[in-house]
Length: 304
Ligand SMILES: C[S@@+](CC[C@H](N)C(=O)[O-])C[C@H]1O[C@@H](n2cnc3c(N)ncnc32)[C@H](O)[C@@H]1O
Image (cartoon, rainbow, N blue to C red):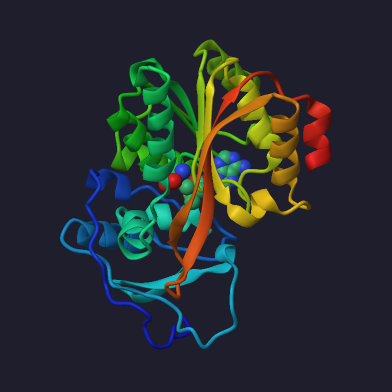
């Protein structure tokens, strides 16, 4: 394990999620992934997580600049410093409390609060009732957004994520937040999952910190969008440059949806999503809109 150089920031504190030790014994890591954590490491980290925060260090600024999806940090586990690439979610979720400490306590992520706050504002302005929300949370991760939506008053929450470690972490850290959670690739949705999602007559699509950067592709977003009932809410965030640049698949898709009246823009805010590993602000746009119609499949395929 190469040394990360001088730590860029000191340790932070994080609220401890609810979890039981039995979860720690389940193996989260796959062969062939960049970071392999042994069951022993997960167990030891799980024990420590209940006591105090992790020691985390970030790369010094003198290295080559890396884009957001290449960022990494090192965390001191019982066996020594282990490197975690931020986008290796399976590894980050495998350590209870690490996601919260890393992104929320250290890097000051504000996106679940911002996106859900924007949705809440729309509900207030339209005399809507949060308890009527039946939400599909796409890229739900370990449930930070579900928890925020629950606090807002949403009664029906369904989580979807592409990796099983996310579903396991949501159950471990926030049991009972989601009525259902599917580990699924939305671009190749099994029939039973599609049926379940349709049956629930979901009227709100929320996706936070999961669009762009090789995460949820436009096709998956469109599939999720088409599962929501007409006049439902759509609330999401995305890095500002992905929405503003012509060549991005998302910017084309969203612009088409707005131009054709499939999506009716209601509100947006430009804000600091979180800090980079070097402490620089990462700017995002959060948007709330109303679904007016389905996305035609040809557009989605064209968006790539
Ligand atoms: C940065 S995390 C955000 C998690 C959560 N929304 C939050 O704000 O805490 C991005 C999540 O998107 C998920 N994801 C990436 N690609 C996906 C895809 N194609 N379909 C569904 N989920 C995906 C990842 O597994 C990860 O859990």
